[in-house]
Length: 226
Ligand code: ATP
Ligand code: ZN
Image 1 (tube, rainbow, N blue to C red):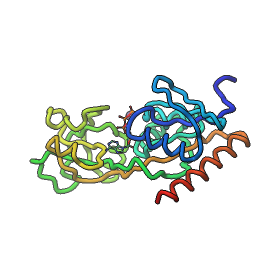
Image 2: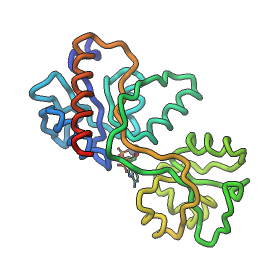
Image 3: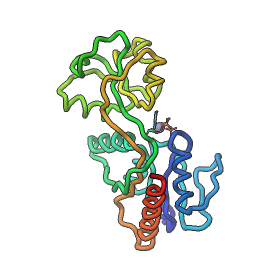
């Protein structure tokens, strides 16, 4: 059928913090391709590989549904989607082939500078803005803290100043965005790197051999960069 391809399908972020490094990694592995910004698909010239350029949020689901064979994605987005799907009874299986050496960030709790924070118990009963409701819930449940949700896909860091929430749970790398919004980081709840994942759908021998070849090259490229 049309939707199952002989060519290996790899989903990468179209544009954003992971896209350049994802493309660079594949090129370092000897996959030759040119990206057309207007196009969803980039065909490799020298191997039976198609790159699918999508929103990062779509990548875990595409892999878990077996629509693509491989994906390069932040562990934060991957775990969030996995918990979400498990709670809905949807397919959430995948294989993590390996962690990569880019995309480092952390998902942290942060509160306004004037907040008198002792530990996560200080958040009991308060409202927290986040784009990661599942990772936040898992963490707060493990601590036995009850809080209120404020789900925002963007502008999370302005929610306290706007009076929408008392604190936030958001991605941090340097902390500059928090500082610019009068917030400070109190607790890291999840540490993340980019990773490469494979669909759990059984592959043809030829496709699996290509995946194995790509993975062994990824291992070599990352070892050489260490
Ligand atoms: P898209 O348009 O694809 O949905 P996005 O705006 O959701 O993009 P980006 O900001 O490009 O996502 O971040 C993609 C991923 O990069 C994050 O999910 C995370 O894994 C990683 N990352 C690394 N550093 C940071 C950071 N400082 N802030 C946010 N994400 C970071
Ligand atoms: Zn996204």
